[in-house]
Image (cartoon, rainbow, N blue to C red):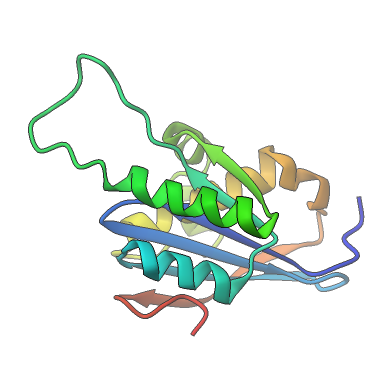
Length: 166
């Protein structure tokens, strides 16, 4: 399928420290520009960021509860951010794709990210969001837009509380 309209994909690795990867895909342009952000996140900040970026598609790491693996101090904040992402998608009529943590990490390991020049040193959660975005692009529904002549280019890394897209 040939891309006829611009496509913005936001991938989220939710948690107290959240990773965000944003890909801007333009028709007939060989480079997909990516912004990677990592920092403290709260409900309002995620909501405002999603509205500002206005993604076509949201890809989000899902939460997996493992009975028998519960531990003291388990933080469930990521579930709340997943709820914000799902609410945004529902109210703005956007597609959302939930992916398991293992999906994002299975193919796009650190070596592969370095090879693609998409490795962000010190941005563990930002890298995980990048992996989710790339997994969706390569093996998920994004595959229909994937053309061999397209390449990803990391254009910005943001650490901290500044909303992505600013």
